[in-house]
Amino acid sequence: MLHESRRHRLRALTKDAHAELDASVGGFDTPVDYVRYLKGQYLFRHAIEAGLARVAWPAAFDDWRCRPLAPLLSADLADLDIVPPPVPPAFVVAPADLLGVLYVLEGSSLGARVLHRRARDIGFDGRFGARHLAAQAEDRNSWPAFLVILEAFEPFEMERTVNASLAAFAAAGAAFERPVDVVA
Image 1: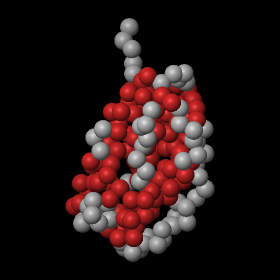
Image 2: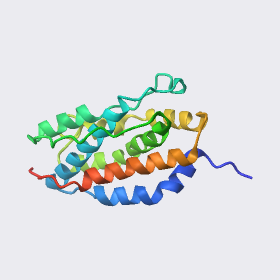
Image 3: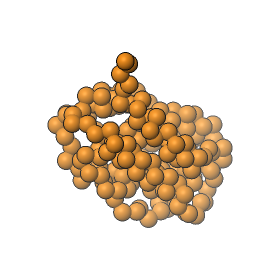
Image 4: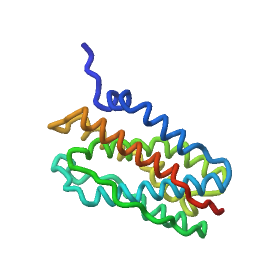
């Protein structure tokens, strides 16, 4: 019998939530579309990173941490002279939910590579307006390092990790669906 990795099992069990988030994020072909995306990402990352800042990280993570993007998103909005939307309350992250939340955050770096190319096509890059995407797209080490932690972490509860991932996907989707005035 083949052993299915935790990563692949998580992907299978969260694929519908991931697809819903992708639909909420949508694409961006214009600066107006990009500003909508940027505001949603700003709302999500600020809330979730505030929650992560309150977590006591298990020793198994050693010195690995996900890269905070909220400051880069703030700078991206400032580049575009966009007043940041009010930040929602911190997303509550229980220590036992950490792997599920991080699965969503770290997995987003893979999609960021595609989004970074789209942003460049409409005039935003790592120096102006798309710092957060450039940081994610250029970081080729964090996702593989996280996967090592994910596969080795004990005690591991798949159901809890899936539920935490689903909650993070839902929080991201809500941030992108939250009505905010878009000005570009």
